[in-house]
Image (cartoon, rainbow, N blue to C red; front, side, top):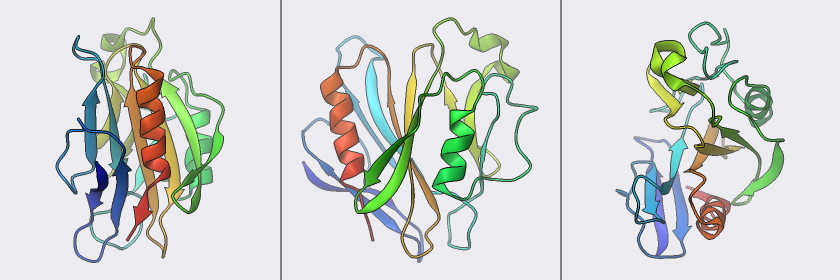
Length: 196
């Protein structure tokens, strides 16, 4: 419990630290992911993934593209990447197939941000989507974020890092079996984020 370095940027890139309020989180400091199982019946788990795109000159960053349709993504990648929180949340909020929520204003540490939740529909047949995958977005050439099972929720908290650090997406991932308390804990974790 306590401060945890969620992302350790290479070279001059930024570091992101969050505060863990309970034990049982699994993750390697600096690699951008945390996981906790809230239910003994696998694979019911919740987690946090950080994506540190988009398009700027610091090391380890890549442009981030939001697909217009999460199921039919192969033909719906836009020509230009998103570069601001407003652009990103607008693209996610209009994404077909992913049942997006209404966007909300949030605080990521001391920074204003936007949040939108994407849900894999309960009746989707993922194997009928392009290449048998359900994709929300892609960072760079090959770091795609996908939905793997019906009912999966990716709650995206999007903020601009300080000092020109680019767009950062905190992906709070859970399924419908997870307790509301664990979801609240993940939201508090993102709300505690500091950039250094």
